[in-house]
Image 1 (cartoon, rainbow, N blue to C red):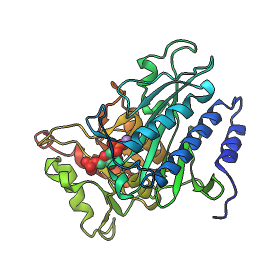
Image 2: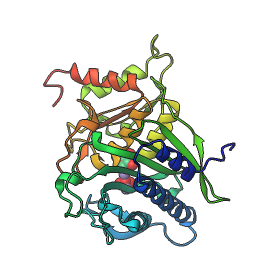
Image 3: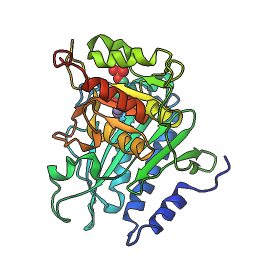
Amino acid sequence: MNSMVTIDRHILEEERSVPGATGAFSDLLYNIALAGKIIHREVNRAGLVNLLGKTGDINVQGETVAKLDDYANDVLVNTLSQGGRVCVIGSEECENVIHPATVGPDAKYVVHFDPLDGSSNIDANVSIGTIFSISERVTPLNTTPTEADVLQPGTRMIGAGYIVYGSSTIMVYTTKKGTVNGFTLDPSVGEFLRSHQNIRTPERGKILSCNVGHAQYWEPAVERFIRSVQTEDKQKGTPYTLRYIGSLVADVHRNLLYGGIFLYPPNIRGSLHRGKLRLLYEANPLAMVVENAGGLASTGEGRVLDLQPTALHQRTPLYIGSKQDVLEIERLIRDQSPEERG
Ligand code: AHG
Ligand code: MN
Ligand code: MN
């Protein structure tokens, strides 16, 4: 790696370009990067220290909790509580919002996170990650945060990103400023170094990422889309290649760099649902990153970031990635007859 720009320096440079910045937002990003390093360390030695496996608990989503889910959740809650900048936290692992132990008089940030995404992959050494979003509270400082603070649409995020614990550990984040940058952890010096500057995602991709095991439950538009990318075509070129890790964060990161589309459609047959992925701490932050890199994120009917959340653990259908691919699936969904939509 040639870059000698640490994430701290990058955050500081960005802060200097924002008139009136107090450093509070930078502080928050440092703390998230610190949490990422601590989780990285534990993920890398998990097999050695008996952290692999399940705790025996079932979380709010009805899923079994991996020990590392719990660990990552605690690390994030603790680091975000430092400095008293955060007034309320939403986590995939906690049924209710968390009120940090220390809340300073200027605690204006609302943070949501998925502490470990793809945790079913942990025990097999497959890439997993942390996803986070940052918004500003809408209620006055020094009051108890309310639903209005917790349930804000994605368009109100001021920062979002993720950390993938993969063949290397990388933190990618974006802010209102609009650029997306990636920082790879150099474990020998313990620093995230800028490795991917101003990431732009291809307009059209070559990768299709979805769990085809669920195809029988999907609406016809999704089948039509999949068939269309399996066929050689003048516009799209050779057929797409299928890549599905089963860790949303790693699938989206790969597609961000290479171009492609990740889809998790609603089930309109069988076990009916409106999508599996959670809006506030999975879909929204990834949508902000992908859109700031030139891609799109859709519910199939509109922009993910425009959705008004109604619950902390709300789920949404998700079509995310290269712009042309996402526009195409939106068009196919729109063109269905009402009967086909189920
Ligand atoms: P989590 O590990 O945080 O519960 O999230 C799991 C999610 C997501 O990462 C992944 O894309 C999806 O579940 C995979 O679901 P399927 O097994 O249904 O494909
Ligand atoms: Mn997840
Ligand atoms: Mn998770």
